[in-house]
Image: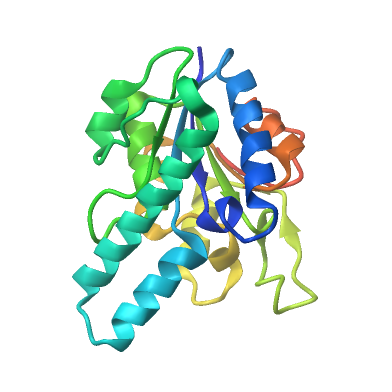
Length: 227
């Protein structure tokens, strides 16, 4: 049974757009796919986390405090998804990669958020994929792939359908905006490149696209990063 780690952005979980309905549909999809794949989901914080972080920053709090607020928010989001999955998900929200890896089992879905200050949920998902020996990572974002520039700002931005790990490395070295709307952060990308872990960047609210990506299909609308 293939193991698949999903980095689920907070902007996908709780954007304020029929969230309860979407979570129910996402839970049904994950339940169905859990019969074939061993799934691990790492939830991001999204705009709720940014609200708390920006408010605390305005009060002059430290980066450690800001990160801690963000982590707590990711775990609330993880709990929300866990409630949608009901008995299929482990009841406890793991707080470390090691704990999450140990909880994995066929037919069960492990849901978690962030771990420690300084580690983003992209980085956590990559570390978890490495720990469990996953076959691929799905980065479910609000953008439907990697672009040559930020598609929200540049109408000339073009989607990149396929990338190599070497091209990912070059993109992360650059100072342009290409990766900011879809590529993993530096910590996650370093693990992905070192372990040669296929990384699929997809639109997280497109559930058919999510189905294809989790199933390992090469026929996705997003971006595939691999050898």
